[in-house]
Image 1 (cartoon, rainbow, N blue to C red):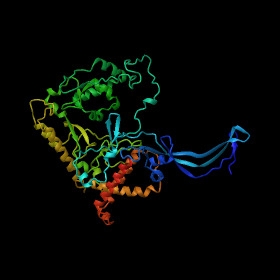
Image 2 (cartoon, rainbow, N blue to C red; image 1 turned 180 degrees about the vertical axis):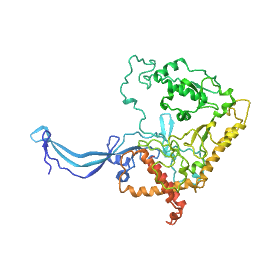
Image 3 (cartoon, helix red, strand yellow; image 1 turned 30 degrees about the vertical axis):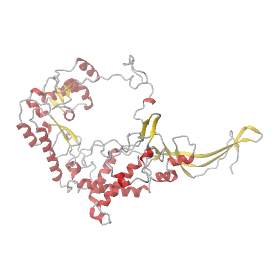
Length: 528
């Protein structure tokens, strides 16, 4: 039995190896029953704890369907749950005796460090403030439900989540005093000191941005010549860049990155000394040599920009050309996410029957291959690419541009006749579709999306089986190894999945898709 002892002496404490789960409740608990009701009770806590990747939600108004909860992250801890009792010492009421007992170990804690989402509540403005009208939105017993649901009503659906982040993205409140170089002067003393951005020194951009209607500059400014040479002065590399613009007066940044042999990260200091930047028109997003006006040279049409994008419901749905950011993935707040991956896909990635034995990621081109050139035997690296006409290695496109002649330069089509750019895009799309069908791929239009649904169902089953066996480790895996492993698994899964075998398990495709959609809806509801 544990003995009472004074607080200034060592004592033996009984230790229990029982394990507990701690909920760091984000509030002052005055009623334990109400606190448990706000987190769904002990049953909900047990259900959330059984799934390692789930978060615990606290709902301040459990009966209000419009209440957005706050989420608590699961953290691994090494804490002890202790029970401490105190009583006055016999004979001396000014001193106390203590009894200490360790009830168990807390190895899992749910911490609510994030904010709740924005609340959209049914209120009407009244004279005395706001009036809650949530009780008016519920159906009454004497209301015909069929008549109620058949009424014409405005389609007003609030989003599942308003904010993609529930943690502040900036750390202004926690940042210490910034040390500046001697002689620094605050550029704006008129603004109050509590506003953000008052101590940031103005950053000068020496690039000359020119629109289509502006006059062409003949040289960089004296200030740019002086200041940029202070930051980076390499006459040989500057001379190399000038020679590139002598051979070709208009360049894209991607083309310069391929042909320039110097330091690629130093181009931001060298380019403003050699060329200006078009912000719109036929040569937008391109660097043009000082003094060269493409509006006066018909041969400049070969350097015009073609904004080529992956078209919806076309070849991009058959081949996994990944976006720079996910299209339909719901961003869970306060979760660790890897940086978006943008692979470069070539012809070899289309052959799903090819065994995966190479160490190089399937579909990834080497860094030496020029990404600014469009070839009919290779897919674009991204869903949106800016190509120059001279870099499109398609004979039909080159013949179409050379045959088309016009006397005036247009702000939209440049030196090309109206509609030429659209025809070039159509030709590029045709070559991309031919590339897919001629590569030996057996996928028909729409079949790739169907295979993705089948893969998702299979991954769901595997995930449910593995969840009970081991918990997910709180680590971010290596991005390259993870992408390689996932890509190999995807190829193997496409090959292994057979619709006939799935049907043989008394599950047809429609029921599987419905099950998959219900699973996705459940995932979305979990984060509301």
